[in-house]
Amino acid sequence: MANTQGPQGNHDPAGSTQMFRAFVDEAPQGRQQAAASSGPRIGLILGVVAVIAVVAAVAWLALK
Image 1 (cartoon, one colour):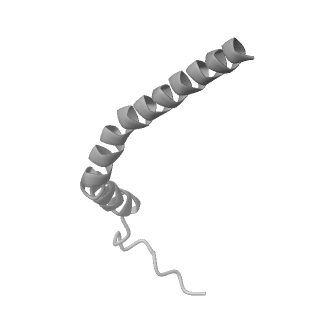
Image 2 (image 1 turned 180 degrees about the vertical axis):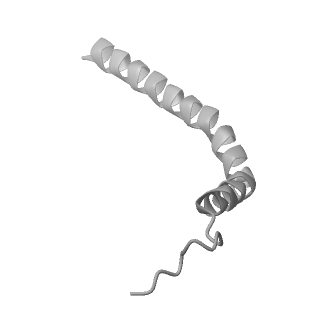
């Protein structure tokens, strides 16, 4: 087997990590904003569903 990463100094192990981090930092900006805006919306929907469930349970018990 040939050692292609010899002592020539051509291999920079931090280079690929830095390039990956730069890619990750610049790519999902739209996704982060969409996820942040959908968080409160999901909480609001769950809150409304919970309130409807409680009102339905109270009405069911009152009419029973």
